[in-house]
Image (cartoon, rainbow, N blue to C red; front, side, top):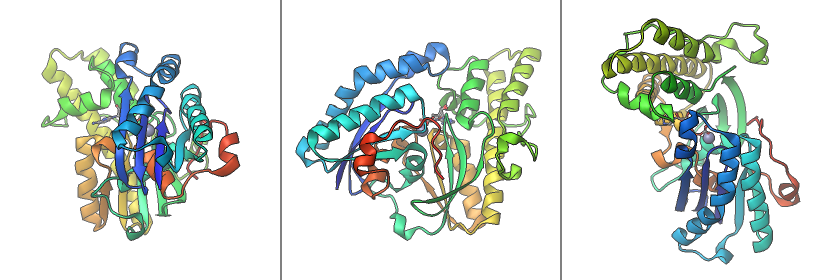
Length: 346
Ligand code: KG4
Ligand code: ZN
């Protein structure tokens, strides 16, 4: 089963070819970071225009790099949600047109499910069938979600953010601290080896009964917007004088996010029967988070599955991989499906 994946849910224009759901024959990502950097965040109009301009060459590159012919493709898979409507539309439309032209199957894929699946891609990745019940943590610029997954395809969301996503909290903080965009990698970089106690940031616990919880257990959910406000006030009252002062604030802020992510994850592990902790999404690249996840998994005596770095952030290999194991919407339904910007995983 050879699948071409297309991913355009946000600001990465990506295409990849994956065999049998795990062997990555090519993985092309065109990052639009430089276009959005001056605005400190993704500008939807710029993102969709860039997808239109670059996607054809990105797809072609993926097929050439894979060393296959167009006729070798068994299916074309494209993300249909969640994400920015105007961005999703470009990739999904391209996928529909290409699958029609090639006369092959079209698969519409859920982006968050693909982030979760990303740990099963690549030569050294474990086989999903051999991994027991999982607790998934998907942390990116658009999501912070805890998912119980007895197996791939069976999901129950048990926790999520009620406002900003963890990646958003990193990006906004970097902007306030005068660091670059995207902020996560910058905060990670300047925080390395820096003590975390300089500033006490709140850990953002949503109050039980908050309607934004939508019935979910408050103790398994996050609220990151107060953290960003606390940083804003701190910087106003104590403007950092040099790079060392910025790093001290950044390290404390990163620590607050990591501790918030870990406390809910730990609680969900204690309450469930997971045998593996799975983390995906751009924020799962964070070095402090990776270390904290490893410590937690060891403490709880369970396996930790992290995606290889090229498959953590937005990429199309995870889209093609997930479609390659039979997940996603197929057949006539896929050709008539519309984008779903607020799509849930369960
Ligand atoms: O998964 P992703 O590429 O796109 C979305 O689906 O949103 O995640 C992008 C997010 C950005 O907010 C970026 O700042 C964050 O992931 N990120 C990081 C790191 N690398 C990327 N956050 C913390 N530490 C990192 N090393
Ligand atoms: Zn993503």
